[in-house]
Image 1 (tube, rainbow, N blue to C red):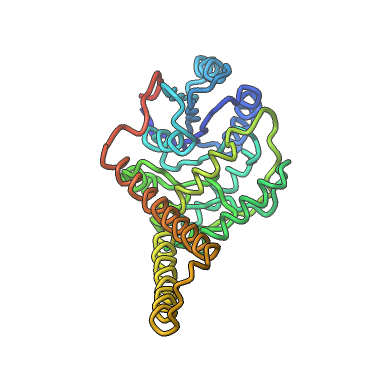
Image 2: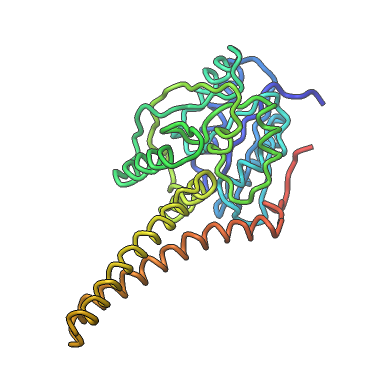
Length: 311
């Protein structure tokens, strides 16, 4: 079988309302590019009829491939499965909600021909309905950029195109808690971007809840920064210093001023609660890192397939 010039990976979770439109627009882009291709739909155990629609397209179109998970493993794992099983010399990643315009793949592919291994789509503006999400995204990317040990581009998601050499290196990275945009930045290579305006979701409900977004942010921070651990250490030193001053104050009051009156109940309670809060926070931060170590040590498979038509 001939190796396709490009594979397009589309993670799917409850996207039955958007799949027909997405498929039509992707086909138009591929006709414009006039290169061999495969469309790799990765169904993350959707609850609607997404997989039935994809299988229907697959029976009519040999370029349509699908990977069907046994349960919901998450967006990043769905993309990871597509990267592991696709065959294209170039690989584009795009979500199915039509917020990222499929037509931009033409520009991404054309830009890559100038000698770049990675071309990512950078958001100039976004038309999300939720103002809170806009603020959350903007804040997260800037915090991560400030504390990360590598340069992760601002205002970018997973919408990008990669050369096969980059995909091969990504497939060698075994960590369970995936944060792909950080991993791609860590790899290096020759990277550039194209700016675009991100549309609102075409139809359906967002797959990323605030809880999932928080988990993704946590994965990004713990995977590419030791700053939380350093903050915990610094807080420990600050608390130790404050405690030392309180001990000295207490001893001086008792030895030189014979102050044995049981006063200061409020300050004692404040100190105890403050110390307890710092300790619990520090333990929680350390626990997050240990939890990720434990998950990687187990070496369970990242995903389990129910069905696929990938060769």
